[in-house]
Length: 214
Image (cartoon, rainbow, N blue to C red):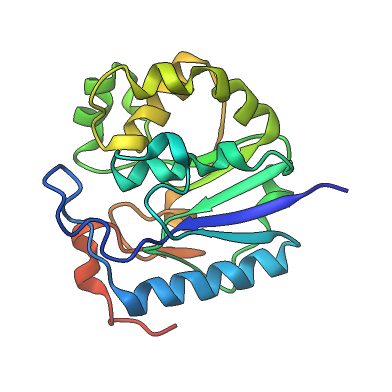
């Protein structure tokens, strides 16, 4: 039987003293609790397990690196066939359909549509239309195994813009990993914040917290 897992990175105050591009990271307990609650509900609805990264070195190779690299915890989920990552400022809604059924054998993410996207993509040497926001990622076992042999090389290659998100975008492009584009207005509303199946309070959009109830 296919094994599925939903996971998040939720480490209290991990970004408090960081002096890099992700200083917009702000730990908001109520938001993160609701994000976890909804992610757990979604996992149960989809017949998936749930896992929360709660310490900075949970994914051991990321020790000493930015918290964002703990997204690579998917490399530890050896017994799972399908993996879904959700940011902890990402609120998946009760009406969200089962991505494990929608995506099946294809990895999936949402192409980002923000003013910064062309610059971020250019810095990586990839087309802007290929640049995805890593706030939600659906990964298959085949995709993970294709990435695995190259992770150490890419971790040491350079300082990545937007940390793990930048590195994953470059790896997907270099390794020619095709992915299903989840419509951002439905699944990852960058930069709108509010979407059909999820709301994403990334960065400065945290100022919108409290304008809707969950």
